[in-house]
Image 1 (cartoon, rainbow, N blue to C red):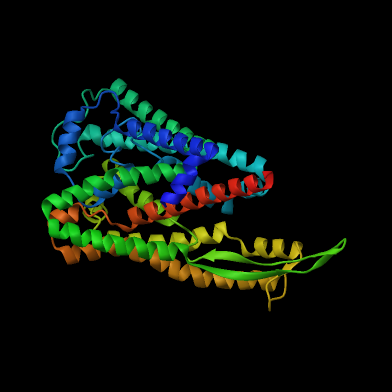
Image 2: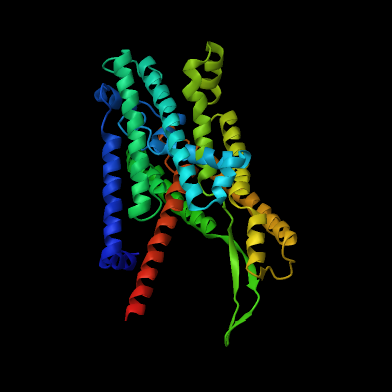
Length: 429
């Protein structure tokens, strides 16, 4: 790792990209710590310090502690990520979006523009709900003091507009990282959100119980190693291309199609977390009976109904997302078009059926893997049996998967750019 970092900072162009990415990340964190106008930050921090557990901790983790602090970047990257996933899902049922997806760069640019519009709409809805919860005293559990200095219509409108503008700025910062920095911008920003609150959770556990802290660190290292192993695991489907004589040389090669065990990545976990948070956001708008039912069954992350829905939705979205992102028929058609074939399988429909069969066999353990990660906090709670540690348990499946997945992807992109620079230097010599 040190060798890679040394090579990165010795390469001027790559060094500039890394420093640019780090600068954007610092700016993003400043926006998450900067409170929105009209928010009583002293009361907010006092109430956050006394609250914890269940869905509260999950929101803190996924937003980097910004949403519940009502900061300028309170919404973070969640509106954009949710809009991107929704657009991918709509491309399956709306022929126009599917046609745009197949048009190449121009079609993708239009889909990106539609995603931005959807991001703004989701940001308005999310910001309005969060500010409404803060105005009615339901945002932070157990907090009786007013979080807003002025709960008038004009003051609330200013806070909502500030958060929506912050979400648009975050979307722009993520796109800047993707274009001029290193790695995927939105993935790095959500990675930053998770990592930012991780040390605080660990320090709280150490203060409450040093023994539990040591046990949790050791268990966390084994968990990270297991996640890395599964994330790197893949089934390589061999593909052979027929040899062609061009001039006096014969061209032909044997390659493979890499199909990961966790083909869906972190998308099912993030989308499920966002979906299960919607009933909590909409609870103040419901009747007393429905609101009480939501608060009883869908607010606590340890409730059996919540965990069952969490696991089933993750498994369902894993299958659905893989089915729309990997089309066996398109892959088989592309292989046939370039004169390739899977050994022992006829080109065309038999190849597509074989790829679909392999994909289905891989998605089953991948979905089970994501579900097990989602259940890890419950297992840890049963082992630790410490209420204070349970409320501050940081090694949830969502956080580990985000950190490991984004970290591996970013390192791979850096190594790929380093290899490209080395090849260019060799050719110049």
